[in-house]
Length: 119
Image 1 (cartoon, one colour):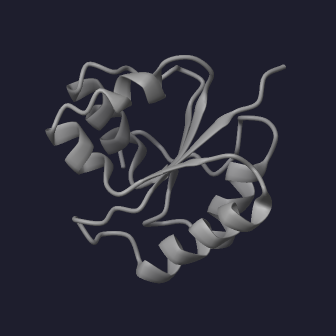
Image 2: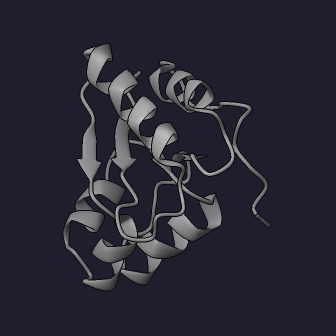
């Protein structure tokens, strides 16, 4: 079984995710020794149609720490990059840093923290 890839969005421009949550999640990832990719802002990348989104969306499932799952899927899709159906999106706006960090670092997909699509 392959390992999940991790993407951390710092939500730098929208300022919608609590600063403490972002900092704590990033610190957990950095201290874990697990490889992850960090981006300044997925919204900005989507607006620019950044080709990195296609690279990130392709291949193995991706665990994404960002905001609302529906919004994150839309950001990828609007750039022509559809996320793997097994990708997991963790909402740093509504979950604690501990919940997000634990779900990101679990070896398997399927966290029970995924939010309903209508949010």
